[in-house]
Length: 83
Image (cartoon, rainbow, N blue to C red):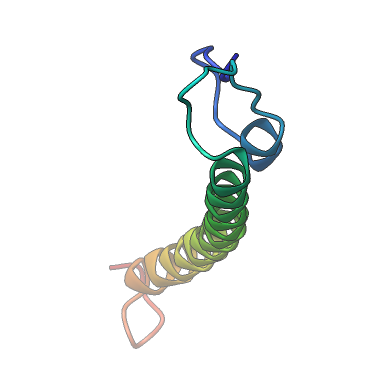
């Protein structure tokens, strides 16, 4: 039976998919080859997503640091008095 729950589809789910056999069914080798390609693509996309999320978090932290420094700069006039 094909993987059919509503959980996140992961590469190992695709690779482990099992289908019922039918008399006039699809070529099992072609199906398996296609599923392997799909699983490979899922792996690539998961890696890209992880990289993008890591980079987004790095940028968020850098922005917070910049905002914190920038906020302190606006509280003081150039002559050192409070603005």
